[in-house]
Length: 536
Image 1 (tube, rainbow, N blue to C red):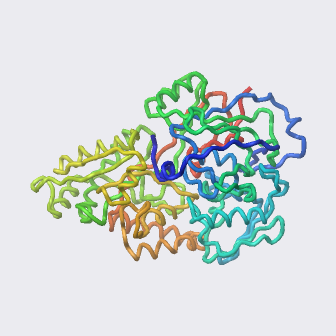
Image 2: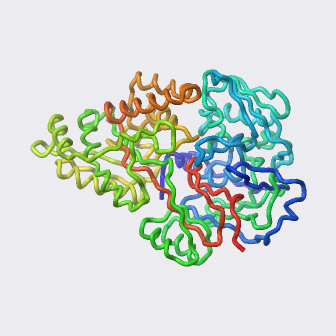
Image 3: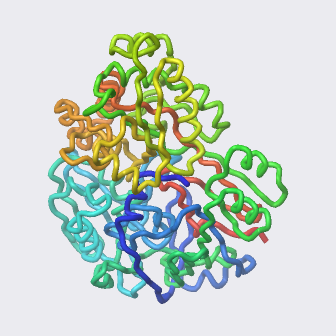
């Protein structure tokens, strides 16, 4: 299992039941990932063999924890990104937001006013028409709910529906609203009037709507084509999708080989290598925006001493770990993964056991002093984290440090972390929208009651610098890039609040008859099913 921040709602959100009726539509992905509308009736006349098969995705965890598009903040991104759409979508290759429900946008010179022109002829699954007033209501409801990733809209002071096709945002401070609008969470445009009292709705504008949902069942969720989708449909596209929950990687691999599933989001290195030489199977590999964090307890216990934290950083065998991951992870450099503004290539860490021992000696620990015991929590069932723990435990043992490592479910780990119940907290992080701000605001800004600030760092200067990041990103990218680098040096080197061993590499396996799959790290583990077709 791969536990990270999204999974907290898996135990916070109660079960709900939902079935949805289909309406009518479709879309064709054009150049640069921008959807291009077809003329009426053109889908029926497109050349190509009809695709009656179901695309089966095999996640290792339950899919849905929260159906409300305003507050969704977990695994359901893999389904909801196909049901809902935002104003923009992030193009990872071009490293910029591209049109989706908005066809174009402009911003004022000071970055405090943004105007989006909406695509015409778009229908919600409810049958209602998308216009500026409907989009305004959706974003305002998300802001008012204050759940999930709603903080992404914090810069917004006012939203105005200038006319049916024009949406204007006035901001309290400059921010990259085109990137915000491409977020995988809290940026969905939906029909507010179709939301029921419990927050459930399927009234998005995306190419698929819900066919069935059976919480706890192996085939948990199925989707079907929204025949009224604004882009039209081609015969070879997948009109049916199923999510078959398969916790064990080996089982998922067997199902893939038999053709019972079409997509496995992650295999271990051994199976991935085998998949590369297996007939009927194709593999893809791409860098991600998801990295592993070791958060050190700066508030209490032995790690309160910065020298202990620095020693822990130096004890990690970064290169050995990257080699052992066999391509499923790449050595990190700083907090910000490559491909995002703020990545600092010169911050790549190195193991230095001699320096680690010297720092421990200064702090009263080490080989000639009493044994130091530290507690660490990590994700139950995550082989990559387990490997890290094994290597780190061995290195620390030679420094007279014993690591008491506990594999835990996310809910239990996070609950303990909020109580400052460990010396080292291990978790994954990735951004809510394709910008480095998420790491700094959520993980390292001071918090009286820690949520994800699980190093418990409190530094007023760092807080002030974090607050400036959105405006700098919108108005002066060079200055923002430098500020991100300076902040990483303060957090990693001066405060030693965290170690970042690796950035995950996404290694996928698909059946060979699937065409058109492209990984987008801004939407972790999402397959945009509409972009796929089955080879004839």
